[in-house]
Length: 334
Ligand SMILES: [Zn+2]
Image 1 (spheres, rainbow, N blue to C red):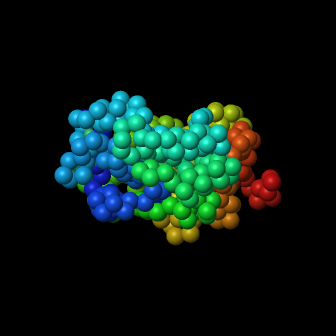
Image 2 (cartoon, helix red, strand yellow):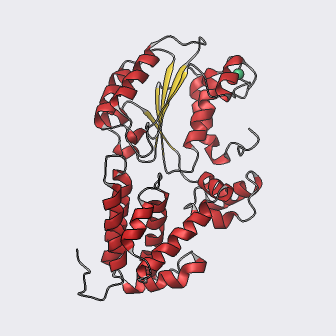
Image 3 (cartoon, rainbow, N blue to C red):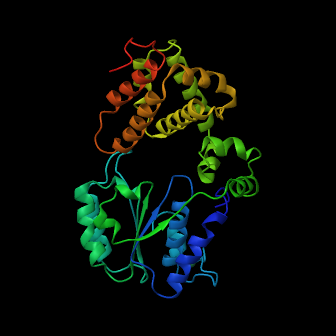
């Protein structure tokens, strides 16, 4: 517990709302926490789960941390908590997994309190999986709570969405995020990490904690090398497509937004160390190419969970990136 930063202050209003619903005995049986990554949807879900499963919650509404239920939670083996996620990274949540979950939720609670399921990312459920969840959403067993987490709630089936109580988790004001990182997560240079994490404080804390920032700069250097013709886009695609997360695409999308802002409004790229390179890339491309590539990257992020050929997708994107530099008429169109 000591390595986990304290509960984020910007989640407090959402938490109080959930707590009040629980105290009034009107907590929805299905909740949908939506919003960008790195803002604390998971923390909110974990805190609520702790409260629902604990035998003796504190007067403030937190899990006691002492009872048998809290002990099970701490070691990750609570029989009344199911975590539903893709069996393989970047793959879909399958219909069989959802069926098993529905059976589990239909059974009586082991500890005599709630049964809880956390589905993350909820948009990873394929259509069959989402459909098989509908019955449970429509006719829930008493004392069950389903918590769906999603960075893209708009991609869930409307029938699933409409049966959930939605709660949006948005970013805190920049100064609040920076202050929290400094005080709660002991980060001396919060601006640097917030910039890299698109303003998402928990993602920024993760960046600071790990080697991710180093990897991110490496990726940017590789993109610059491809643009300058010093690196083969196909070779780079072969390195990138095997990565198990979408971070490189999210970063790339950020850099494209910087190029677009520079192109359209002369806003200097926030990557101070590489600003000159990025300005050069922006100058060599036209706005339409930049918008198109940005759209394609985001479409690729969305499609990664749906059986997309990752290698071909990365090759296509990197070839388009390399062609930003090509003189007019020389292979700029595919
Ligand atoms: Zn407890």
